[in-house]
Image 1 (cartoon, rainbow, N blue to C red):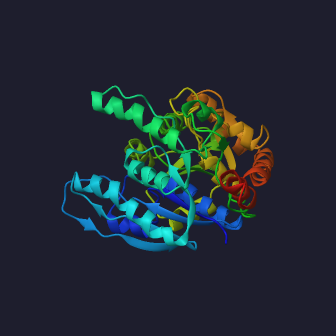
Image 2: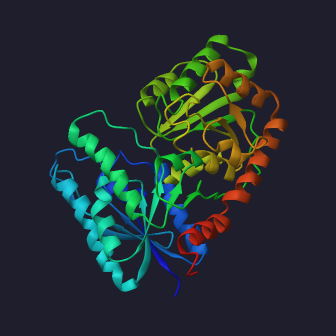
Image 3: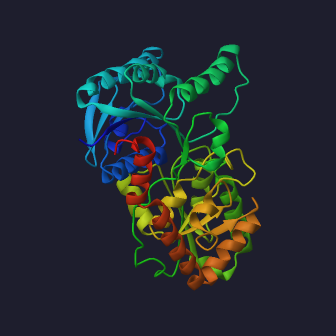
Length: 393
Protein backbone atom coordinates (compact mmCIF):
# COMPACT_ATOMS: atom_id res chain seq x y z
CA UNK A 1 0.00 0.00 0.00
CA UNK A 2 1.23 3.50 -0.79
CA UNK A 3 2.58 5.30 2.30
CA UNK A 4 0.50 7.99 3.96
CA UNK A 5 1.95 11.25 5.26
CA UNK A 6 0.25 13.72 7.61
CA UNK A 7 0.98 17.44 7.31
CA UNK A 8 0.43 19.50 10.48
CA UNK A 9 0.00 23.16 9.55
CA UNK A 10 -2.48 26.04 9.42
CA UNK A 11 -3.42 25.84 5.74
CA UNK A 12 -6.86 27.19 4.89
CA UNK A 13 -9.16 26.89 1.91
CA UNK A 14 -11.40 29.84 1.02
CA UNK A 15 -14.61 28.29 2.35
CA UNK A 16 -13.20 27.56 5.80
CA UNK A 17 -11.38 30.89 5.95
CA UNK A 18 -14.54 32.83 5.13
CA UNK A 19 -16.77 30.80 7.47
CA UNK A 20 -14.39 31.41 10.35
CA UNK A 21 -13.75 35.05 9.45
CA UNK A 22 -9.98 34.59 9.38
CA UNK A 23 -7.90 37.41 7.88
CA UNK A 24 -4.47 36.69 9.39
CA UNK A 25 -3.60 33.60 7.35
CA UNK A 26 -0.97 33.26 4.63
CA UNK A 27 -2.53 32.41 1.24
CA UNK A 28 0.93 31.70 -0.23
CA UNK A 29 1.70 29.19 2.51
CA UNK A 30 -1.66 27.48 2.04
CA UNK A 31 -1.16 27.23 -1.72
CA UNK A 32 2.32 25.77 -1.26
CA UNK A 33 1.00 23.10 1.10
CA UNK A 34 -1.96 22.17 -1.10
CA UNK A 35 0.27 21.94 -4.18
CA UNK A 36 2.82 19.82 -2.30
CA UNK A 37 0.01 17.40 -1.56
CA UNK A 38 -0.90 17.19 -5.25
CA UNK A 39 2.75 16.57 -6.14
CA UNK A 40 3.05 13.84 -3.50
CA UNK A 41 -0.05 12.12 -4.88
CA UNK A 42 1.63 11.92 -8.28
CA UNK A 43 4.54 10.18 -6.56
CA UNK A 44 2.28 7.55 -5.05
CA UNK A 45 2.08 9.05 -1.55
CA UNK A 46 -1.27 9.57 0.18
CA UNK A 47 -1.15 12.98 1.92
CA UNK A 48 -3.56 14.19 4.60
CA UNK A 49 -3.60 17.69 6.09
CA UNK A 50 -4.22 18.37 9.78
CA UNK A 51 -4.85 22.12 10.00
CA UNK A 52 -5.27 24.23 13.11
CA UNK A 53 -7.77 26.24 11.06
CA UNK A 54 -7.24 29.26 13.26
CA UNK A 55 -6.83 33.00 13.11
CA UNK A 56 -6.43 35.66 15.76
CA UNK A 57 -8.31 35.12 19.02
CA UNK A 58 -10.26 38.37 19.21
CA UNK A 59 -12.12 37.80 22.45
CA UNK A 60 -15.61 37.16 20.99
CA UNK A 61 -17.57 34.04 21.95
CA UNK A 62 -17.66 32.56 18.46
CA UNK A 63 -16.89 28.85 18.25
CA UNK A 64 -16.31 26.78 15.13
CA UNK A 65 -16.40 22.98 15.45
CA UNK A 66 -13.97 20.69 13.71
CA UNK A 67 -14.72 19.92 10.08
CA UNK A 68 -13.35 17.62 7.41
CA UNK A 69 -13.10 18.75 3.80
CA UNK A 70 -11.55 17.34 0.66
CA UNK A 71 -9.41 19.83 -1.26
CA UNK A 72 -8.24 18.59 -4.64
CA UNK A 73 -8.81 15.02 -3.52
CA UNK A 74 -6.78 15.51 -0.32
CA UNK A 75 -8.57 15.11 3.05
CA UNK A 76 -8.16 18.14 5.30
CA UNK A 77 -9.00 17.86 9.02
CA UNK A 78 -9.67 21.31 10.50
CA UNK A 79 -9.35 21.61 14.27
CA UNK A 80 -12.09 23.45 16.18
CA UNK A 81 -11.48 27.16 16.60
CA UNK A 82 -12.58 29.52 19.36
CA UNK A 83 -11.94 33.24 19.55
CA UNK A 84 -11.80 33.15 23.35
CA UNK A 85 -8.19 33.59 24.52
CA UNK A 86 -6.64 30.59 26.31
CA UNK A 87 -9.43 28.29 25.06
CA UNK A 88 -8.31 29.12 21.53
CA UNK A 89 -4.71 28.17 22.28
CA UNK A 90 -5.75 25.04 24.22
CA UNK A 91 -7.78 23.75 21.26
CA UNK A 92 -4.85 24.32 18.92
CA UNK A 93 -2.56 22.37 21.24
CA UNK A 94 -4.81 19.37 21.80
CA UNK A 95 -7.10 18.93 18.78
CA UNK A 96 -4.42 17.78 16.30
CA UNK A 97 -3.48 14.96 18.71
CA UNK A 98 -6.97 13.53 18.35
CA UNK A 99 -6.68 13.56 14.56
CA UNK A 100 -3.29 11.84 14.70
CA UNK A 101 -4.69 9.06 16.89
CA UNK A 102 -7.71 8.68 14.61
CA UNK A 103 -5.43 8.36 11.60
CA UNK A 104 -3.57 5.42 13.19
CA UNK A 105 -6.04 3.04 11.57
CA UNK A 106 -4.81 4.22 8.16
CA UNK A 107 -1.22 3.49 9.18
CA UNK A 108 0.52 6.79 8.39
CA UNK A 109 4.28 6.52 8.04
CA UNK A 110 5.39 10.14 8.43
CA UNK A 111 4.34 13.55 9.75
CA UNK A 112 5.50 16.85 8.27
CA UNK A 113 5.43 19.88 10.59
CA UNK A 114 5.11 23.22 8.81
CA UNK A 115 7.55 25.49 10.66
CA UNK A 116 8.59 25.17 14.31
CA UNK A 117 5.42 26.31 16.06
CA UNK A 118 4.94 25.87 19.81
CA UNK A 119 1.33 24.82 19.10
CA UNK A 120 2.62 21.71 17.31
CA UNK A 121 4.74 20.41 20.21
CA UNK A 122 2.12 18.01 21.68
CA UNK A 123 1.56 16.58 18.20
CA UNK A 124 5.31 16.28 17.67
CA UNK A 125 5.68 14.36 20.94
CA UNK A 126 2.79 12.03 20.15
CA UNK A 127 4.08 11.40 16.65
CA UNK A 128 7.49 10.51 18.08
CA UNK A 129 5.95 8.12 20.62
CA UNK A 130 3.95 6.41 17.86
CA UNK A 131 7.14 5.91 15.87
CA UNK A 132 6.29 8.01 12.83
CA UNK A 133 8.94 9.65 10.66
CA UNK A 134 9.03 13.31 11.68
CA UNK A 135 10.02 15.86 9.03
CA UNK A 136 10.37 19.61 9.55
CA UNK A 137 9.24 21.96 6.78
CA UNK A 138 11.17 25.13 7.61
CA UNK A 139 9.96 28.17 5.69
CA UNK A 140 11.51 31.01 7.70
CA UNK A 141 14.44 31.62 9.99
CA UNK A 142 13.16 32.63 13.42
CA UNK A 143 14.10 36.05 14.74
CA UNK A 144 15.65 35.93 18.25
CA UNK A 145 13.27 37.17 20.92
CA UNK A 146 14.16 40.24 22.96
CA UNK A 147 11.04 40.18 25.12
CA UNK A 148 10.33 38.59 28.47
CA UNK A 149 12.31 35.65 29.82
CA UNK A 150 9.65 33.03 29.05
CA UNK A 151 9.45 34.27 25.45
CA UNK A 152 13.22 34.02 25.06
CA UNK A 153 13.12 30.53 26.59
CA UNK A 154 10.50 29.36 24.08
CA UNK A 155 12.43 30.93 21.22
CA UNK A 156 15.44 28.79 22.16
CA UNK A 157 13.75 25.57 23.22
CA UNK A 158 11.06 25.14 20.56
CA UNK A 159 13.54 24.98 17.64
CA UNK A 160 15.83 22.65 19.61
CA UNK A 161 12.97 20.25 20.33
CA UNK A 162 11.85 20.15 16.69
CA UNK A 163 15.39 19.70 15.43
CA UNK A 164 15.97 16.83 17.84
CA UNK A 165 12.72 14.97 17.15
CA UNK A 166 12.51 15.54 13.38
CA UNK A 167 14.97 12.73 12.78
CA UNK A 168 14.10 12.28 9.10
CA UNK A 169 15.44 15.75 8.34
CA UNK A 170 14.06 19.04 7.07
CA UNK A 171 12.57 20.52 3.93
CA UNK A 172 13.97 24.03 3.55
CA UNK A 173 12.53 27.02 1.73
CA UNK A 174 16.08 27.99 0.65
CA UNK A 175 19.65 26.80 1.06
CA UNK A 176 20.57 29.45 3.64
CA UNK A 177 18.14 27.93 6.14
CA UNK A 178 20.57 25.05 6.60
CA UNK A 179 22.24 27.25 9.21
CA UNK A 180 18.97 27.67 11.13
CA UNK A 181 18.40 23.99 11.91
CA UNK A 182 20.46 21.05 13.09
CA UNK A 183 17.99 18.57 11.59
CA UNK A 184 19.65 16.40 8.96
CA UNK A 185 19.48 15.56 6.15
CA UNK A 186 18.02 18.63 4.43
CA UNK A 187 16.35 19.23 1.07
CA UNK A 188 15.61 22.63 -0.45
CA UNK A 189 12.02 22.52 -1.69
CA UNK A 190 10.93 25.68 -3.53
CA UNK A 191 7.36 24.77 -4.33
CA UNK A 192 5.47 23.23 -7.21
CA UNK A 193 5.16 24.86 -10.62
CA UNK A 194 1.53 24.54 -11.71
CA UNK A 195 0.29 26.38 -14.78
CA UNK A 196 0.92 26.94 -18.44
CA UNK A 197 2.08 29.91 -20.47
CA UNK A 198 -1.07 31.63 -21.76
CA UNK A 199 -0.98 32.70 -25.40
CA UNK A 200 -2.97 35.88 -24.73
CA UNK A 201 -0.28 37.60 -22.69
CA UNK A 202 1.43 40.68 -24.11
CA UNK A 203 -1.46 41.30 -26.54
CA UNK A 204 -2.93 44.37 -24.85
CA UNK A 205 -1.76 47.94 -25.42
CA UNK A 206 -0.91 48.03 -21.71
CA UNK A 207 1.62 45.87 -19.92
CA UNK A 208 -0.09 44.67 -16.75
CA UNK A 209 2.14 44.19 -13.70
CA UNK A 210 0.89 42.16 -10.74
CA UNK A 211 1.99 42.46 -7.13
CA UNK A 212 0.37 40.21 -4.53
CA UNK A 213 0.75 38.80 -1.05
CA UNK A 214 1.65 40.60 2.15
CA UNK A 215 1.89 44.32 1.41
CA UNK A 216 4.49 45.90 3.68
CA UNK A 217 7.90 47.56 3.72
CA UNK A 218 9.90 44.32 3.74
CA UNK A 219 8.05 42.88 0.73
CA UNK A 220 8.72 45.97 -1.38
CA UNK A 221 5.26 47.54 -1.29
CA UNK A 222 6.63 50.90 -0.14
CA UNK A 223 9.28 50.71 -2.87
CA UNK A 224 6.48 50.23 -5.40
CA UNK A 225 4.53 53.19 -3.98
CA UNK A 226 7.57 55.46 -4.22
CA UNK A 227 8.25 54.29 -7.78
CA UNK A 228 4.69 54.96 -8.96
CA UNK A 229 4.72 58.40 -7.36
CA UNK A 230 7.94 59.22 -9.18
CA UNK A 231 6.55 57.91 -12.47
CA UNK A 232 3.44 60.05 -12.14
CA UNK A 233 5.57 63.07 -11.37
CA UNK A 234 7.68 62.46 -14.50
CA UNK A 235 4.55 61.89 -16.68
CA UNK A 236 6.49 60.35 -19.59
CA UNK A 237 4.62 59.20 -22.74
CA UNK A 238 5.37 55.47 -22.31
CA UNK A 239 3.52 55.35 -18.98
CA UNK A 240 0.12 55.11 -20.71
CA UNK A 241 1.20 51.57 -21.66
CA UNK A 242 1.83 50.47 -18.08
CA UNK A 243 -0.66 49.49 -15.38
CA UNK A 244 -0.57 47.68 -12.02
CA UNK A 245 -2.84 45.17 -10.29
CA UNK A 246 -2.35 44.69 -6.54
CA UNK A 247 -3.81 41.88 -4.45
CA UNK A 248 -3.34 40.97 -0.81
CA UNK A 249 -3.34 42.88 2.45
CA UNK A 250 -0.97 44.42 4.95
CA UNK A 251 0.22 47.76 6.35
CA UNK A 252 0.88 49.21 2.88
CA UNK A 253 -2.61 48.46 1.56
CA UNK A 254 -3.93 51.87 2.61
CA UNK A 255 -1.13 53.69 0.79
CA UNK A 256 -1.68 51.70 -2.39
CA UNK A 257 -5.44 52.25 -2.21
CA UNK A 258 -4.93 56.00 -1.86
CA UNK A 259 -2.55 55.91 -4.82
CA UNK A 260 -5.15 54.10 -6.92
CA UNK A 261 -7.66 56.90 -6.26
CA UNK A 262 -5.30 59.61 -7.54
CA UNK A 263 -5.17 60.65 -11.21
CA UNK A 264 -2.26 60.05 -13.55
CA UNK A 265 -0.31 57.26 -15.21
CA UNK A 266 0.46 54.47 -14.61
CA UNK A 267 -2.96 53.36 -13.47
CA UNK A 268 -3.22 51.05 -10.47
CA UNK A 269 -6.08 48.78 -9.41
CA UNK A 270 -6.10 47.50 -5.83
CA UNK A 271 -8.16 44.33 -5.37
CA UNK A 272 -7.28 43.72 -1.73
CA UNK A 273 -7.69 40.23 -0.31
CA UNK A 274 -9.14 37.91 -2.97
CA UNK A 275 -10.44 34.36 -3.09
CA UNK A 276 -8.38 31.80 -5.00
CA UNK A 277 -10.77 32.03 -7.95
CA UNK A 278 -10.57 35.82 -8.04
CA UNK A 279 -6.80 35.72 -7.76
CA UNK A 280 -6.45 33.25 -10.63
CA UNK A 281 -8.45 35.61 -12.84
CA UNK A 282 -6.17 38.56 -11.97
CA UNK A 283 -3.15 36.33 -12.60
CA UNK A 284 -4.55 35.27 -15.98
CA UNK A 285 -4.68 38.89 -17.17
CA UNK A 286 -1.17 39.87 -16.01
CA UNK A 287 2.02 40.00 -18.06
CA UNK A 288 4.60 40.66 -15.34
CA UNK A 289 4.82 39.42 -11.74
CA UNK A 290 6.61 41.45 -9.06
CA UNK A 291 8.50 39.84 -6.17
CA UNK A 292 10.20 42.70 -4.35
CA UNK A 293 11.35 41.45 -0.94
CA UNK A 294 14.15 43.92 -0.30
CA UNK A 295 17.74 43.00 -1.17
CA UNK A 296 18.84 44.49 2.15
CA UNK A 297 15.78 43.45 4.13
CA UNK A 298 15.43 40.85 6.90
CA UNK A 299 13.76 38.37 4.53
CA UNK A 300 16.48 38.42 1.88
CA UNK A 301 18.30 35.22 2.81
CA UNK A 302 16.05 33.42 5.29
CA UNK A 303 13.11 32.56 3.06
CA UNK A 304 12.21 32.01 -0.59
CA UNK A 305 9.57 34.11 -2.38
CA UNK A 306 7.25 31.34 -3.61
CA UNK A 307 5.48 33.89 -5.82
CA UNK A 308 8.31 33.65 -8.35
CA UNK A 309 7.48 29.97 -8.94
CA UNK A 310 3.80 30.77 -9.32
CA UNK A 311 4.44 33.67 -11.71
CA UNK A 312 6.96 31.84 -13.88
CA UNK A 313 4.80 28.70 -14.07
CA UNK A 314 1.90 30.84 -15.33
CA UNK A 315 4.10 32.32 -18.07
CA UNK A 316 4.54 35.77 -16.57
CA UNK A 317 7.81 37.62 -16.77
CA UNK A 318 9.19 37.68 -13.23
CA UNK A 319 10.67 40.98 -12.04
CA UNK A 320 12.31 40.15 -8.73
CA UNK A 321 14.92 41.25 -6.28
CA UNK A 322 18.07 39.13 -6.43
CA UNK A 323 17.62 37.40 -3.08
CA UNK A 324 17.80 33.90 -1.64
CA UNK A 325 17.96 31.12 -4.28
CA UNK A 326 15.83 32.93 -6.86
CA UNK A 327 18.53 33.25 -9.52
CA UNK A 328 19.52 29.63 -8.96
CA UNK A 329 15.94 28.53 -9.67
CA UNK A 330 14.90 30.90 -12.47
CA UNK A 331 18.32 31.29 -14.08
CA UNK A 332 20.01 34.50 -15.17
CA UNK A 333 17.94 34.51 -18.35
CA UNK A 334 14.63 33.56 -16.72
CA UNK A 335 13.81 36.79 -14.89
CA UNK A 336 14.73 40.45 -14.60
CA UNK A 337 16.60 41.15 -11.36
CA UNK A 338 16.40 44.29 -9.23
CA UNK A 339 19.73 44.58 -7.44
CA UNK A 340 19.15 47.94 -5.69
CA UNK A 341 16.21 48.81 -3.43
CA UNK A 342 15.71 52.15 -5.17
CA UNK A 343 12.72 53.53 -7.13
CA UNK A 344 14.86 54.56 -10.11
CA UNK A 345 16.30 51.06 -10.47
CA UNK A 346 12.78 49.59 -10.55
CA UNK A 347 11.61 52.27 -12.97
CA UNK A 348 14.45 51.48 -15.37
CA UNK A 349 13.46 47.81 -15.49
CA UNK A 350 9.78 48.64 -16.00
CA UNK A 351 10.66 50.96 -18.86
CA UNK A 352 12.77 48.25 -20.51
CA UNK A 353 9.80 45.88 -20.35
CA UNK A 354 7.34 48.35 -21.89
CA UNK A 355 9.77 49.46 -24.61
CA UNK A 356 11.03 45.98 -25.54
CA UNK A 357 8.26 43.41 -25.32
CA UNK A 358 10.19 40.92 -27.41
CA UNK A 359 12.94 40.87 -24.81
CA UNK A 360 10.38 40.57 -22.01
CA UNK A 361 8.67 37.61 -23.64
CA UNK A 362 11.99 35.81 -24.14
CA UNK A 363 12.86 36.16 -20.46
CA UNK A 364 9.35 34.97 -19.53
CA UNK A 365 9.75 31.91 -21.79
CA UNK A 366 13.06 30.88 -20.22
CA UNK A 367 11.69 31.44 -16.72
CA UNK A 368 8.77 29.16 -17.54
CA UNK A 369 11.04 26.44 -18.91
CA UNK A 370 13.45 26.67 -15.97
CA UNK A 371 10.81 26.27 -13.26
CA UNK A 372 9.10 23.47 -15.16
CA UNK A 373 12.40 21.59 -15.28
CA UNK A 374 13.10 22.03 -11.56
CA UNK A 375 9.69 22.36 -9.91
CA UNK A 376 7.17 20.46 -12.02
CA UNK A 377 4.61 18.50 -9.95
CA UNK A 378 6.11 15.21 -11.11
CA UNK A 379 9.73 16.01 -10.33
CA UNK A 380 9.10 17.86 -7.05
CA UNK A 381 6.68 15.19 -5.84
CA UNK A 382 9.11 12.33 -6.44
CA UNK A 383 12.00 14.32 -4.95
CA UNK A 384 10.14 15.03 -1.70
CA UNK A 385 8.67 11.51 -1.54
CA UNK A 386 12.12 9.95 -1.93
CA UNK A 387 13.51 12.27 0.72
CA UNK A 388 10.91 11.08 3.25
CA UNK A 389 10.31 7.48 2.16
CA UNK A 390 13.32 6.57 0.05
CA UNK A 391 13.85 3.21 1.74
CA UNK A 392 10.24 2.01 1.51
CA UNK A 393 8.91 3.42 -1.78
